Amino acid sequence: MLTRTTRTEKLDLRLTAQAKYTLAAAAQAQRRSLSDFVLESALGRAEEALADRRVFQLSPEKWDAFIAALDAPPRDLPQLRKLLKEPSVFSGGKRA
Image 1 (cartoon, helix red, strand yellow):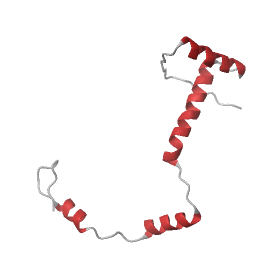
Image 2 (cartoon, one colour):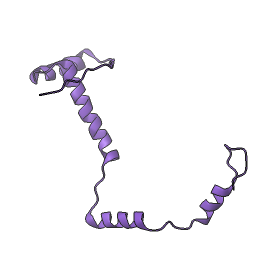
Image 3 (cartoon, rainbow, N blue to C red):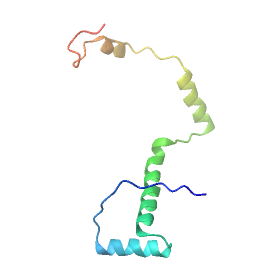
Image 4 (cartoon, rainbow, N blue to C red):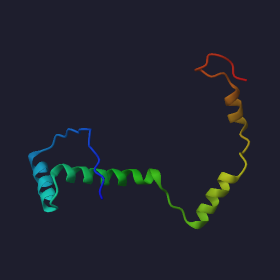
């Protein structure tokens, strides 16, 4: 049984008459409402746009190098250590 989610948010969109006609024709061709067609199309495109920010693929060799880098002890970075000991411009005080 399908669970139906109540839509509570609204998105207004300005478009040309030709763009609306094209969207409506595509929705009708798929026997869907214009709202459903536009929403599903937009969500599909959004998932594509966000995919490279959620998942990345590496070859087995690069994966091993990645894991090795994560597991390696931190490198000593004297300049970073010095920077972190300096007073912060936000705190107004001295850092230990």
